[in-house]
Figure (cartoon, rainbow, N blue to C red):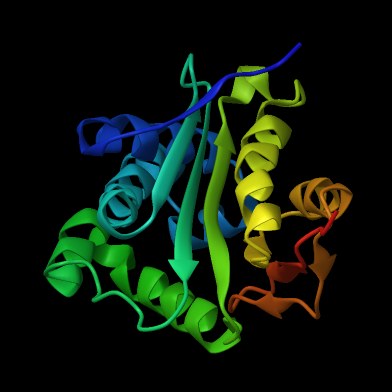
Length: 196
């Protein structure tokens, strides 16, 4: 069964952010980011809305036709784009008392980000009830086809052993993990393009 994938426009920014927040709410790292489970999903959605909006302007946002899965990519080629407009103020408004934790995570990601040209998959998220049905794989294959045709590597940060193993099946190699202050790991992963 083939899963249709399409590129989204800015009018779907909030939907994409909500889908990522819903999929990420039970990750180990998000319980460190937002320790209060009653506020976690809303805070995550507010943060992701800033980043998804930025990707709508400077990257690519893909989704399955039914919006059960979304992928957010940033080309990391040549000059980096400017940061999201009024990022510090918007981050503080979205994340409140936990803003410093989100800033710390931004700094960790930046410190571990590779320098060669690549596309960065910032988010891959599938609705909780639909995980394990090939939706994330279909979203990856869609963009990997372009990356392979253009000899462009890819990079991502895996936030759980389960996602790390999924990405490994799609050709990503894991590096040494880096960790947030409570010890929760992220695995930096790199994929070389497949040439035919």
